[in-house]
Length: 128
Image (cartoon, rainbow, N blue to C red):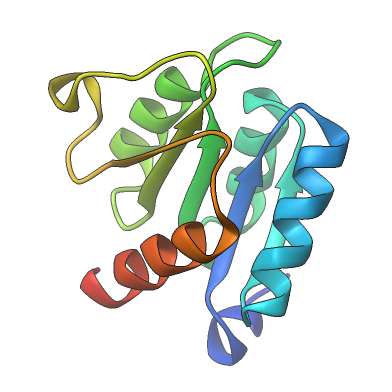
């Protein structure tokens, strides 16, 4: 379905329940040359991954969101099911211990600078 994305630019799955934050982050990532898939919660993100997980290189998720699981649970699930996907986790309210992050997962606190997020994602893409 979306196999051509990975050949053009890295694909980031952005999971954020606040529409304005999601829109701004998606715009920043697209401006930086990434292809962005968006999800409002973990359930939508998993549905997206079921259809095109081979194309996604980075999951960029907020921790706090409605639905069946939070961002940390989503990251753990993604790591188990799709270990090729790198993880970038964000929150304004939580500062998780590095030990609570999934292996090789990174954390960026909110409010974040879009340049920092872009740099983190570029590092994740090149290191995987």
